[in-house]
Amino acid sequence: MSSTKRQQTMAKRERERAVEEKRTLKRLKKQAAKAEKAAGGPMADGPDGPMADGPMADEPTSAVPTEAEPNVE
Image (tube, rainbow, N blue to C red; front, side, top):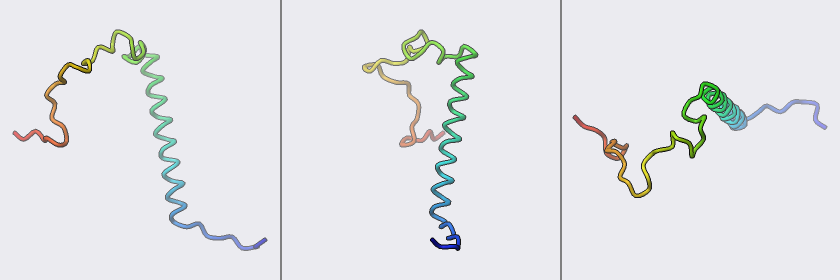
């Protein structure tokens, strides 16, 4: 074995940082969902609960501008 340490590459550091950021965001998202559920928010009833009365597949959605159609006033 080699007695000297090899220096980490920048690419490896970037990959490790990206993985850590992804884990942190996932943990924060889970904590937010747990807190919302504990507070009795809209996610407390589940996807088929009373708060799940969004537009049906055949109903038109609201006229909210998308990224393709910016709202110019």
